[in-house]
Length: 95
Length: 300
Image 1 (spheres, chains in turn green, cyan):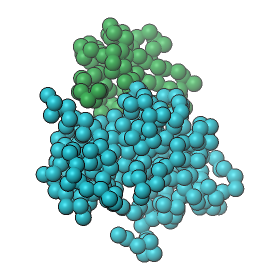
Image 2 (cartoon, each protein chain N blue to C red; image 1 turned 180 degrees about the horizontal axis):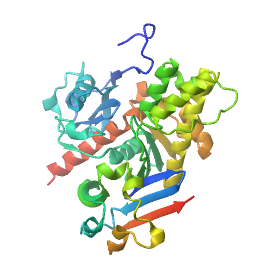
Image 3 (spheres, rainbow over the protein chains, first blue to last red; image 1 turned 90 degrees about the vertical axis):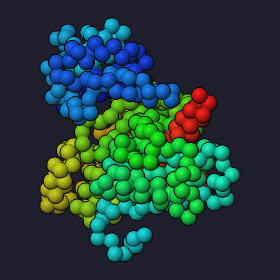
Image 4 (spheres, rainbow over the protein chains, first blue to last red; image 1 turned 30 degrees about the horizontal axis):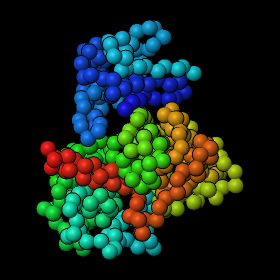
């Protein structure tokens, strides 16, 4: 299960994409996020609750501000780099 | 029930509930319920042995737990059912943590995909849920399991609540906005504001400019449809495509989204004869998960 957190607007599109199947709940991404925008959240998959990295409820609707310091063009999105399992991706397509 | 003729609050949509005729819960092995407390509507669905038995849809009040109780009580009305007869109850939706009688809560994403799979069958791959306060685009597999999903990051923009505000402003009953918006001869430019507060201001400005109510409405609904289509295009629109949530009844949105995407949604089943209501997809999914979880726990 892949979750897209982010936005599309006049400036382009920006999404933090988290793959719940790949996530092993190690919390490495949570530790490196400079904005404390990530947390573990139970996802309901195959009738089980699996703790998976997720953007916090608080930040979900303001990713344009929260995540603005981290853009892939600078080659530095800490949560993406921290994930050894490549469960987190960042899409940034400026218009 | 309210009557149409003394209607002055144009946003106020009609609540409804019903029991499927010819079914007896006393003969059932497993009785479950799904209660979906949304930001605008609360929905309850009672299932017996995995089939829809009764349902209710009403407006969410200021208190989520009261709304949850009311919804389930209304679905149980005239059936002789009481809370102790239920084997398992699942709460879902915006207010899911405030469903006091629920055995557990499940996110509405999973429930909507499951519910859409039940309503339309295994061919459903893309679900657009247009709720009261947000819009979700969900991709699922043939079992109704979520493959990917995307939530809009804005507030009431492009949602049921925004529609209520505009209906009230234009004094057009909420049930009619879709049809009225389609009565324009030419599609106007969409309103540019995505925030409903600004969109309302913009709509007032357009009225002052001499635009007809129908044209302003078409402009607003077109903007909503464009935003929704963007979400769907992001997750990819694979057939079959369906729309759930209260706004699935808004033909103005449905037709415009279909036109933009170039895909027709699957038709809505007859509620009276099937009990299948796209507005209750989340509650239907929750009631199905309730049955699966009950059976899983029993076999443990």
